Image (cartoon, rainbow, N blue to C red; front, side):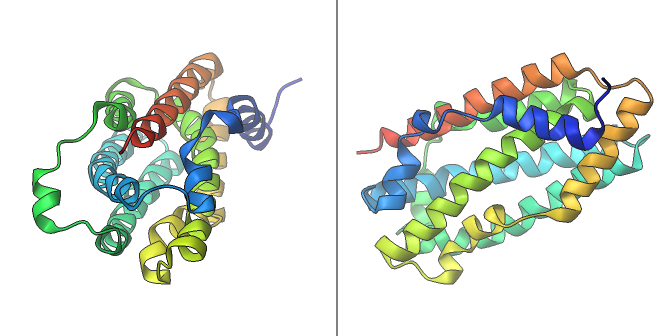
Length: 220
């Protein structure tokens, strides 16, 4: 039976969903047990991630020029990263991150493996395959952000402004979902979707995502 794009996206997201037990840091933040230093490290690493992903998504939008839906999807992602970067400033400030520390912060390899791989996908991956892989990964990321946002307010006394970075990624994005579905459907209809490759991309993204949290978990 041939799946529709919506069915394929749902099936891929379910297949690549990470084991909840693999992320030990998000539950700590949700319970208020992570240190303030860990929150500061999260803000510092995200500055690098957001900037890199923004450029990667813009490049993917250019490469997907023959698919209006795919171009719209990646353009929306790039615009979202730019907005998230603005929200990140308030989170960083309330976490105690200074401009001097931002300038001198050495990024952690384990945290930056994810955006490095997204950049690799921007150069080498078929845009439709990347959309399928990213959509599955975003589902897990959004769930993490929802738990973090709640924990910041409840246990750390963070303001709505300082929590907005995580609120942004946690909220539903129906327009983005529609763009992803249209792009994947076009790829299915034209025979330009390699689901095996998309699953490989998605599995690696989830592994690098786990590496990001594991690296932060090591913060003193």
